[in-house]
Length: 124
Image (cartoon, rainbow, N blue to C red):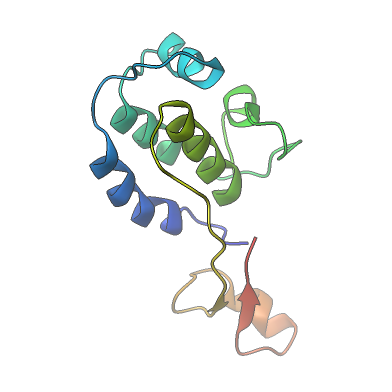
């Protein structure tokens, strides 16, 4: 698992192009975002991206990011994807697997060194 929000930040460019307009459909996620003053998809995505990284107590609970005020790449992506789907946007989560090295994932080098690895394959 990536311990930074680099993938989330890179994906935000795509999210922000999808629908910067006002959230128009009702649903539990739309309501939750509106209750904290976020009324458009762009601001919702930016808010989720700005949350600190942290493992959630129940990653299968779609509102856990709201409850705990942090999330992993997976839970943050899932939250925004669910909001997009609730808004009728065509979005789906995909799995990405790549080799983690110190150069592409700063901070992982110490773990790789501990286990005598040059790289580590990762994914959700």
